[in-house]
Image (tube, rainbow over all chains, first blue to last red; front, side):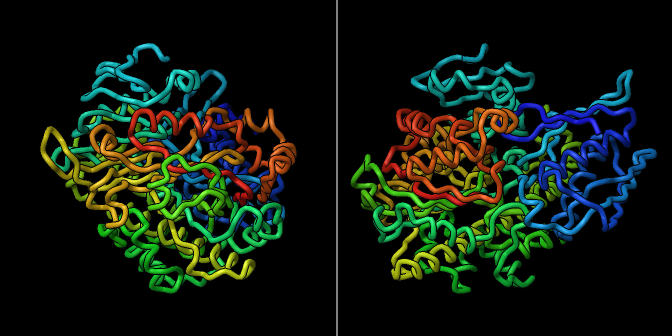
Length: 135
Length: 477
């Protein structure tokens, strides 16, 4: 896990570095869950997401938006994911548990995943990501 | 002040065409020199980016609570021609019709000062925070009615009184709502969240009227010195967030289809007259209506709590007004000496219609529209009134709040929720939230001074001060 919260006045800006695209998406997913639900998250329930997109930026926004949707409507909080990405097709297995108001209320709701300032770049060590969550 | 901008009047600044490539009109913002020290260049760039959009009229505008957002800056206002202009979710935001309303009561400060039991009861009665679910049973047909009729549905269903509606912007609902343009996913999120406050900067605050600046307007708005009021700040919850997410994607394709060049993907847009533009507008209006219904449902809960606890009449707590902060509207304005309908986007800005506006109820025609400006936690909130100058300069718009100056990461490093709660309690303000993080995130220090922000709009004449409200107790998500 390699992500950090970068100073941003209004919203939550996350920067991640990872050796592969899958690991980069995983970092963004973990950052999102941490922002909304805090750190005390366990496993038990499994969900699957399949998506495709025209480009990698759209794919990450769609993936994180879908995670937000499933978490909210199904009352689930996720702690881990296994992701495969091939030709802009994503499959993610999400591991989580039911929302517990006692343990999962320390965060803040994310209203949306923004395209503003979204950067995914390949470099010598793999990939870097800057992404903004509207809170 | 940031390099490249120039002063054009007292607290008025211009961002000239050319600040970013492709600007069709200049940018204009209202800010004092002292607030200028916290202005981010990113916010001015976003203001300039908006000026590149097709059909923009006169200026890309920003209010003194301007700060860096996504797409439009927060505090951004822009009007677009209906023939040549575009509509963009980036000019409204994810939280469609995030807004604020103010409720008066017959109570005085001595009745509620130090009453932790009141704050606890409100915290119990109004669902707040992450995962907060409605205690009301909203059926899918009710949801359709919420989206079509907004606060008007809520009042008809018994969650308020008829008079509430004439004290809401647009009578509590936009007639252009189109539920068919709202996805099944958005509707699924909307059902369990009606009547919930949410988290982040949303709050419900008990306040006292601590200063009157304009006695005639205060009287017309039903405000008296020493009176207890309740301010409610929230929006369209997951339903609105999903509508923005869904339509941003659809409009991104439309941007390409209509060959519109945009400098930021979050400014994805479509001609107002296009099918994609109309669909977004209809879905956004439905979400705005959901938000008005939501604030009406919370108002009902607050009235029930206060009526029971203080043995006062449910009908003795009239609404001063309800305003939207994040919305796009078709409004009639003067453009080049002609009256014409335009599409006004307000992203973190408040409608502030001046006297004689057709939109105002008869008893407020002479005074102007009430404008409710929430302060940050622990600081003053304000009531202002709209002006004719706002109609001329800002398409009838003013600021919406204090505006952040400190990031959440900085806030958490420098301030503990516990210390903030203790300090506020010493000042006579009771704070109740689900977590200390939520308090640290929204501490008074992370915002501009609300006094300074409202002074800028008052001096610029785009709205005028009517009353100050001081906080006594607040619940946060």
